[in-house]
Amino acid sequence: MNDSATPLAQEASDYYQRLLRPVFAGRKFLLTGEIAVLLGKLSRTLIGLDAERPFLLAGYQGTGPIPGPQDGELRMLGAEGTDILSVHRHHQQTLDNLTPELRHDIDAWDPDRTGRCILTSAVAVSRSVAGRQPYGARLVTWAELEDKVRIDAFWDAVGVRRAPSRVVAADYTAVRTAADALNSSHGTVWAADAREGTNGGGLGLRWVRPGDDGRESFAYLSGISDRVRVMPFLEGIPVRDGDDYREARSGEEPDGTFSFGPAPQGGFVRFNLKGERVAPGPSAAPEVVRAFRLADRLLGTEFGDPETARIVRPL
Image (cartoon, rainbow, N blue to C red):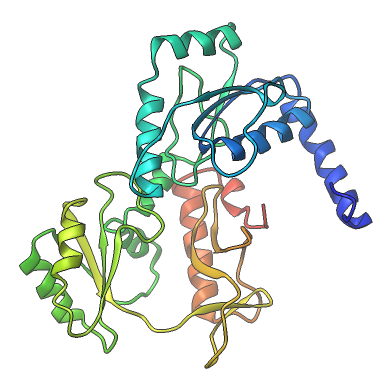
């Protein structure tokens, strides 16, 4: 904690450190992620909880001081790409094909092979790295729900009402026909499948406005997918109002809330730019509360441990 921390915040920090120290003390962790600077911060946190000095596999440095020897055994893998998603995919491919020299270094750091791997990327799928099993990773079945062309089956199983949509082959005529049938006054939204891996950052998504034939959008999406999900563009911006959801008033700026969906740790929750994950509050629209409860129940009974799936407090 820094000097400006309030006594209450310091008390909370001390409390959680006491809870976490027995979990991490004396354990070895192989940390993977695109940005070395962020791995260094996590490494220092783990060392502060009495974990062994970690091994860091980073894609590139990032902005800030690079982790020093006291922070862990650092190796830079040289992840490359034209955007953050392609950098992530290149990094994951590199992790799956580590050089013999790097594997030797990891084995020298962890000769008993008791270390566990922490995948820090938000879109990484659970996997072992250099023979070290993942720790705290989301289930593959949960990650699969992020495929835009598969999510409708989940909503059908849950029984949640939603806007109409169609999933069609990545063929321009098929996509254009679906868009014409579903077009709203604000156009349609086209989303790629996960053929190339999980999409993120809106990179597999295109808003095709009225009057746009969508050829440019289709050219991009067809290069990364086999199927495309089409739905009407829905007007409205979710913003925070206590713990609830409401439509933004005219001229009002959103506070950072940007999506509402299943979390890696379980539960059906809201995400915002502050990294908070919270359940809908008592005055939320009834259909939002119902969707939350139904989705959480299915995630808990079909995709993981029921108690874990109900963790929706800020993490």
